[in-house]
Length: 413
Image (cartoon, rainbow, N blue to C red):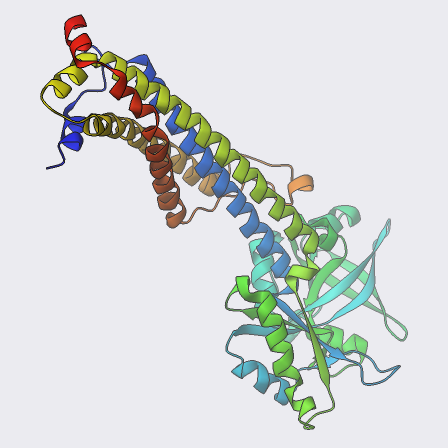
């Protein structure tokens, strides 16, 4: 029988049998705060990564496919023909893809004007992303020919031109000649990414094809979504190899190149990587605070139980066994603190995820609230790690038990 564990479970943490000693209460509170801060910091960083990644991916996709011009003066437009579709359909990691095209334009009101790019929407990838960030109006159904002159603009553009959903605006397109269209603002989105919001509006692909005098299945590039974001670098090279196999085998004269969201949004992802360092520092500091208070609490418990130590040694218990009793008691304190910290922080994170009561400055952080994301395995791993570190740290100060003389402790008691 593991009697040190049995005794640790039976012994009270209080010194007067009515309430915990101040040292034990401080240790519990310290561990609870430390665990809560660690979990919150991880959840916030993971939330930032998820939100920023989704925003960058929403504009670019995971992988972008371009056509390499065959000769000088050749355009770089890409055609989504049957051969290219057949390749994309059999690539195992390609989850979805869509053709994209853009054309420069000037939107003009009576009092102001603004240069933008009209980006064509084909499929549901871009539409789903804009739907998540929609503030006003609706996303047009471009399968309906009657809606091809409707567009979705950013909040930044709407504010500059004083537009709202339902307004119509004269738009001039820069092609071989200048072409004008009166477009209706169907919806207004806000991604808080000024680099994109300032220049992009979204419309029907058929409108761009008509204005640019290109075939309906021709565009600027193809956006590809994969089945695993973490393997994008590997997938980028593999996809390029798949696409260029027909040309290498002499079955085609078209070569393709690929790019990915990690290089297109390098600045954003570099910023996010810096947050990992901050989290590591926070976790280390919180671990130190929790361990120091636990060590102090355990030493006080040892000093308050000199009579118990003397009695156990007189009965023949080894120093190692008695040390284990106090280590288990300190771990009990840590476990209580972890449970309290988990409950408090998980409730707060749930409320933040649901109600967004903690705001942020969107101009600085690209999002107007503190995002949180916390997989269950993170909580389990962190709690297990805290308990393991606690046990290892408490082994050394528990040696203080061996310095207590049985005879002296029994006499003083």
